[in-house]
Length: 132
Image 1 (cartoon, helix red, strand yellow):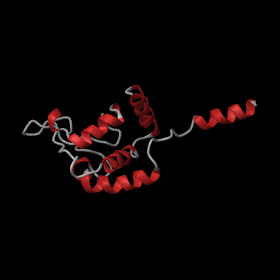
Image 2 (cartoon, rainbow, N blue to C red):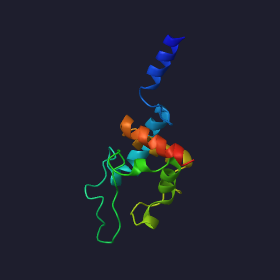
Image 3 (cartoon, rainbow, N blue to C red):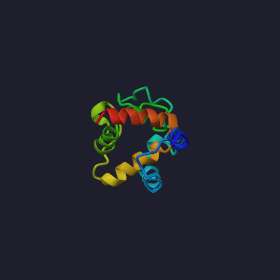
Image 4 (tube, helix red, strand yellow):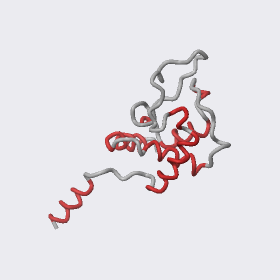
């Protein structure tokens, strides 16, 4: 019995289980490259000066690869950002509500979360769970 508990504990200390499937992330990579990469970069690296507003006072695309604040937001908040855009928040991101289905929006999020380290994902998962 103790051996079984030890094995279960050892297995739970590994890589965190992600909310999305590998297939969803794969589909999301296509959605991301077509709709997001032109601003956020092919690997979600964002714009180098993403913290500085542009000449119109809007903030450019931040990194989505775990190097900025995307992991501070729940899944619901991330999807709302994709759907509604960021202009209302002082950003330059357009709404994708008409271009992408809800499943495609979630797939795009899965794609950029696949860039995150396990450590960043684990921190995000705690934030997401606490937002419910």
